[in-house]
Structures are given as C-alpha cells and as structure tokens.
Amino acid sequence: MKANLLTNIAIRVDASTRMGTGHVMRCLTLAKKLQQQNCQIVFLCKQHQGNLIAFIVEQGFTVLSLSAPIENIEQEVDDRKWLGCSYQQDALEVKQALKYHPWLDWLIVDHYSLDRHWQKLIKPLANKIMVIDDLANRAHYCDLLLDQTLNRRKQDYQRLVPKNCQLLLGADFMLLRDEFSQLRPLAKIKRVNTKSIENVLISMGGTDPDNISEQIIYALITIKNSQPSLTIQVVISPMSTYLEQLKSFSHQYDWIKIIVKPKSMAKLMLEADIAIGSAGATAWERCCLGLPTLTIVSAKNQETIAHNLTQAGAAINLGYFYALTQKNFLQQLLATINSPALYINMVKSSFSCCSGLGADIVANLLKNKVITQ
Image 1 (cartoon, rainbow, N blue to C red):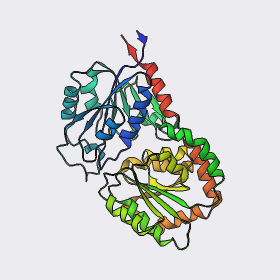
Image 2: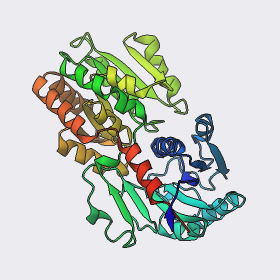
Image 3: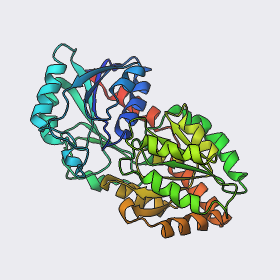
Image 4: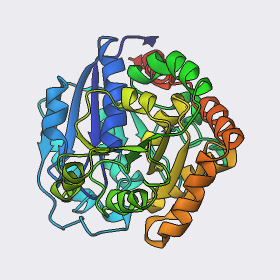
C-alpha cells in the first residue's frame, strides 16, 4: 500500500430554493482545490427547484443529474426530508449514474437528508467516504468527516461516526474561495480606517425563500432621514421568487442596490461596513474579511453557528426571522453604528474566527490520505 495522487472523486450534493446554495458552493470550493491536484471530479445532483446544476457545469465540472424529487420540499422545514425521495431510491440512482465511471478514491457527500443508511449502500462504490456536515445530529458511516463550525468539539461526533473516522473540526477547515483570503490584508486596513458605518450588505443566503431581505429593507428605509449617508446592497439569487419585488426598491430609491450574481462576493464584503445576513456558509466569508454582522437565523441548522459567532463576539444574533421585530432590529443596528468600540471589537473577533485557508488544508489532507492497493 502506498500513498498516491487522488484521481477519481464523486461529490453528492444538492441545492434548491428551500435548502439554499451553501452546500454546493462549499463543495465547489473544495472541488476546485482538488482539481488543481490532478483530481477528476464528478458531481451528482438532484433536479430540485432552484438547483445549481447549470452553474456547476459553468464552473467546468461534469454533473450527473439525478431525477427530480417525488415530494415537494420547498415548504418543508425538516431538513431530514430535503431529499425529496427515499434514501434507497437516491442510492440506487447514484449507483446507476456511476455505473460506467471508474472506481472512486473518494465519495464526498454534503446533504442533511443523508446518513449512515445511505452511506452503507454507497460504500461499495468508493475506497473512502467523506462527509461534510455542520449539524452533528445523525450517525454517519464514513472515513473522514468535516465540520467547519466554529468551536465544534470531538465529543459532538463521538457516538455518530465509526471509531476509525478522522474528524476535521472547526475554524481551521472552513472552505472558502481564494478571493476571500486574497482580500483579507486589504480588509484589515479598511476596517481599521472605518470612521462611520454607512454601507450595509444584506445577504440572507441564496434564494431567501422567506423574503427576509424585504423586511430588512423596509426597516432601513425608516431610519434613512437620521442616517442620510446610509447605502444598501442586497445580494439575491436569480432563482428567488421575490427577485422582481426586491428590484422595485432599486427603482424607487437610488441608495438601494439589488445585486444578482455578483462577480465577486468578497469585494462586496470588503466594500461593506456591516452585514445583515443568515448564519449559513457566508458567515465564515464575512469573518475572513472582518465584517461585523447582525445575524438572522433562517433555518434550524443555523442555530449553532449563530450562537457560536455571538459568543465569539463576531456577530449579534437577532434570533429566528419569524420572531424578528423592526424595533429590535433597528435598536441593535443603531447600537452598533453608534458604538465605535463595539464595532472594532466585532471586527477583531471576526478576523480571529476564520483565516480563509481551510480549503487548501482540507485538499492537502485528502490528497495525502488516499491509499491505493
């Protein structure tokens, strides 16, 4: 047995209007790093409403499309049901899709609806299985598990993975695109020289199915007279059902800009002074660039991230979107705007949470862990 280069990797991941885009985006980040190390990557994605299959292909990867879901998941809040079919059916489709592909060195799976039952069915296809998770709420049958949640502990997975499973946990393994680490030095200079908080970035994650962005915009409009220099940039997916609704604001107010498919999310975060956003994958991107955030929880899987970022001093947790009031939101925002000391502390705490180098670390570890007979 000897270590060898990775050659064949399959990634099972989905995106949809309900589950968002974060799973696919972090898998793409890792895939690009692995591709640089002579790895051949293929994605397997279900044809959910709001899927990113075309986008993945645009990024230069092969996608094996799985069937559309049998069950409508777009109003489903239970992430265990986001597959849209049984795990047995999904496993069968994956096996069929990979039938004529070479033996896999690694199968990477990033999906809240898939656990050890699915992984055991798939195991004959691959030398090793890697799971990307951030919930620590279900058992896995895998060789490697990555959970990039801040302050995640080994005890959280002690009874959920095999004894020989290697764990990559916490801030060192956050999967961020290169653009964030590249702009980090500029961000450190900018944050130190920020004298007033004027540019607000709203990023509720992908399609924002609950239209939280509009609620925030309405609140910010009410304080424009007292904060005349305030500007708003709202990032939203072209697949959002509320896109045209949000665009109407940019026609009415020249200080509100709706951004679809930004060329560089890192540059938008660099330009921003403060963010209002969900506690999903973009939370780590904001931290890498030292951007203080008012966090709104839009799904159960975001609770731990929101809590840990608040404990670290990098964010202020406003709680679940459905309990958010305009009064509470504006109180927290204005308190941050009017307190330079609080703002600087949030900046420092954000920078300390994420270096932006995790994708390189994980790709190198994967490369070195591949064993061939």
